[in-house]
Length: 235
Length: 244
Image 1: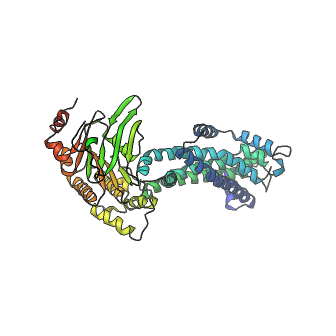
Image 2: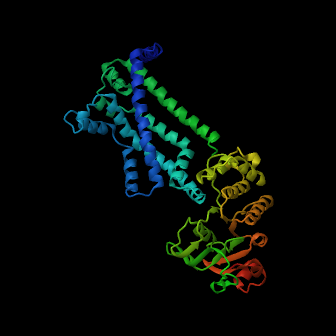
Image 3: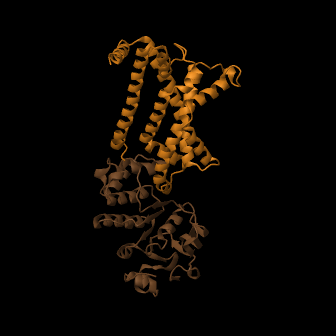
C-alpha cells in the first residue's frame, strides 16, 4: 500500500510542481487531439447533414461504412498510414512520418466516423420531427439542413465530445506513426506506455491522472450541456 | 358524386378556381386511400373537407399542400400561389414563441422594419404575447395550435390549409382560432380546413367537400349541404349515425 501511496504522492507532486516535460506532453496531446477534432467536425458534421438531408446514390452504403468505421482498430490505422507515408510508401514524399501532423491525421481518421455516425442519428431524429413542418412553411433543403444543425447543437456537442474522448485516449495509431519521440511526438498516452515499461511510474501515473481528469472534464461538460440544453434550447 | 355548384357542366367562365383535380387517386401500398376525385375549389372563401375517420381528408389536404404526391390523376393549382399547411400535430422549433414566428419570415425572405410589430400584433390577437419568450414546445396544446395557425399566417399566404385546427381545444381557444380564420378569409386568404366538427363547419364554411372511403360523396355550398342534400350518407353523418 505504501508503494502505491508513494507513487501517487510523487505523481501529484509532479503535477503541482508544473514539471515542464509533463506540460509539454499535455500541451502536445491537446494540440494534436483538438486539431484532429476541429477537422473532424469540419468534415464529419457536413457529411452527417448531407446523409440526412439528401438522398444521393450510395448514401446507405456511406452510412454503413461510417458505422463500421466507428470500431476501426487504431493499430490498423497506424499501420496503413505508416505504409503510405513511410519513405518507400506512395505518399512518402510528404515526409510527415514521425511528426504531429500524421498523428493528427491518424486521430482525424479515427474520429470522423464517430462524429459523423453519431451526428447522423441525432440529425435524423430531429429531421423526422421537423421535415413536414419546415417544408410546409417554405423551407428549402439548405434551410432544413441549417435549421436541424442549429436545433441539434446541444446533442451534436455531445457527439463531438465523444470524438474528443476517443482522440485523447488513443494510443495504438499514434505510437506507430508518431514514434513517441521525446519533445517532438510524445503525447500522454504514448508516454504512459513508455514510462510504465521503463519503470518510471511517477510520470506515468501523473499523466494517467491528468488523462482521467480530462476524461472527467469531458463527461462533466456533456452533463452540463445536457442541463444547459434543457434550459436554453427551449426543448 | 353529388355537386350542385361545382360540377364541370356548370362552370361559369367568370368563376376563378384555385384548385382543380382530375381523377385524383392516391394509394398507400395496395390500399386506395383516395379514388378518382374530381373537384374544383374557388379562390376565395372558406372550404371545408369533412368526413368520418379514415375517409382520406388529411391525405387530401397534404396532397393539395404538395407534401404528398398523388399516385395517379392530376391536381392543378393556380400559379404563384403561396400555400401554407398547418398540421394537426403541431411541431415547433426548439426556440421561443417569438423565434418560431421570426423563422418563417426569415426563410421566406420577408424582412422589414415592422417585423417585430407584426409578430407582436399576431401574438396579441392570439393572446400569446405574454409567452413570447417561453419555449414554444412547452405551451399548452391549445396555445400550440394557435401558434401554428399564426405561424402559417405571418408570411401572408394566399391559401391556408388547416388540418383539424381546433381539435382538443377549449371553447375559448377554438373561438380565437375561428375568429382568426374568419378575419383571414375576409382579408382575402383562401382557407381550406379539415374537421369533424359539424357545428364548426356551420359557423365557418362556405362550401363543403364530404369524403367517405376515399370518395367525394358530396361537394356543395353550406346551405345546400345542411338543408337540401339528398345524399343518405350525408344525412346519416349529420344525424350522428355510423357510415358503412
